[in-house]
Length: 448
Ligand code: BES
Ligand code: ZN
Image (tube, rainbow, N blue to C red; front, side, top):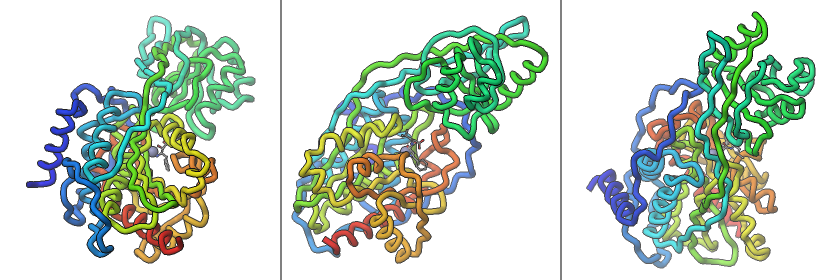
């Protein structure tokens, strides 16, 4: 039986449980900011059994040498299941429920005690936005809602306000008007907040590279905010040279409370715990194969490899939900830890975007980073350091005083785009990440 057939069988089983993929769950495709690179043919790295669909009891720990090896090819099957069969998985969406069920099945089939850990999120439902220039020549301009933009319709004069710095709004006189600003240098939320403070009624952010893009304000804005392509931004600026331009900006969106859930698998063991995790939600704009079906897939494959390995630790494998809306899943996980359990966590290892790019990067606690760099050197890898620590789930653990390691790979040209597809995720990269984590775990175990 080929692995693809086995995977289909596993998904069929999931379907009978009411959690299989359905058509029509993929959000509208939006224009990508970058052209897709030539696809690298996925390489099968090592043979491994298929993703198991039949629950089996946890076997007693055998001798170390009988533990299975990490397989990049097996991990890639989970990437395909999440990114191709389930597709785009924004937190709170119906497809995300199917992803949760798929992961729950995988962990249970490997013999783990696995459960959902639900929590409430504010779901931003974007029904689209438009920008229309008034007058006889006025045409609608293709616009994307900046996530968490206020909803509403604003009709007013457009003014060019540079990059959207407070002093630029002041100089441009944006009071009561629509501010046109270029992408770059300052976060979107800061541009929009400063515009609102200066009295602007809406903001249009024009891209600083060809095409449009999908941006997020991370939190609700006071005024409607949309993005347009670089070319449409230039055309608007050109029109402004000829005299006043009036436009209508319309954002159709709403917020509602929905349920998201982490998938938590546990292998009870010693008093100290190792948490290995990655987020499985994606942005709405694309299928999130590298961000972050890749990290989730490595977590599931590590769970397979480590199920039968002797270890002094209690192991927890966690697929975090709602990372893309502000690290909510990991923040919830950490908030649910009792003080003794928080203190018992020896380390958290977060895998985010490990399938594309040519350099392994590690971030987080210095001691763990050094362990990973030593392990990487022994594997013949050039492991570089990532200084910025805010953008993924390990940050929630660091904030709670728990040692955490961030494993990442750079650079992905399809980040947060419709082109973040499974075919660009290289099984060999998944295997590098998996082996690196196994070596770090072995080093931690030796030090226990
Ligand atoms: N996977 C990314 C984080 C990332 C991107 C790490 C590039 C390293 C390099 C993550 O899903 C993400 O997009 N995070 C947001 C912040 C989050 C709090 C919404 C980000 O980095 O902008
Ligand atoms: Zn991510």
